[in-house]
Length: 215
Image 1 (cartoon, rainbow, N blue to C red):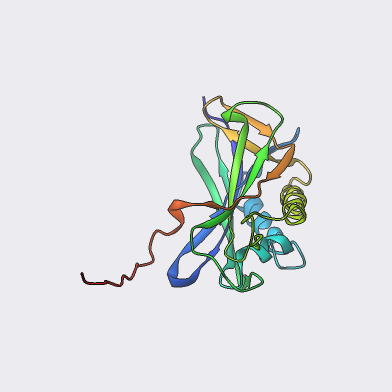
Image 2: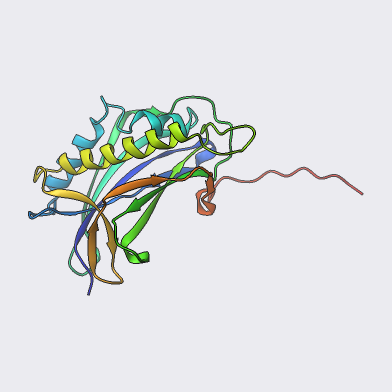
């Protein structure tokens, strides 16, 4: 049977009308979930204030580039039937842009792997963060170890801060949600690999222009 949980949607814009989002899940820590509109609205407003009002941590801003911005925080409650039961949004008065020029395309992403310490697909998750400004080694085409470590540690701190910002203070933790096994599993660590990935669904509305070379 399905399981109840909260989800936070950190969303924003890209050039050409494209949008992006990352959507971590949250579960109860021996306490209640955020279930009412008032709780969810308060939570969204509190998330907007994180990282000195920049919402996302510095390593995320450095990855997404100044062509990408955070515009909206949406908090959601999925009930025991697994369906969306309540939601609230906080729209940033001024979008928070990333840092650095974009050097890569829409679909470039760095994968933030969510580890729970348990084996199996139901006990791990992924967040695909836009990586339009991610610096890679020009010889190996890989992300440097120091950059990966900063991303991993700042992501872990950020997810914990989101949970702590929820109205039932400190009663909500970042989790991997599995409706397959009807279970929420607390995230124990964040893993970041050294090769950029591609999120194929990211380019879903921008029109592609072509150039033709006649034979």
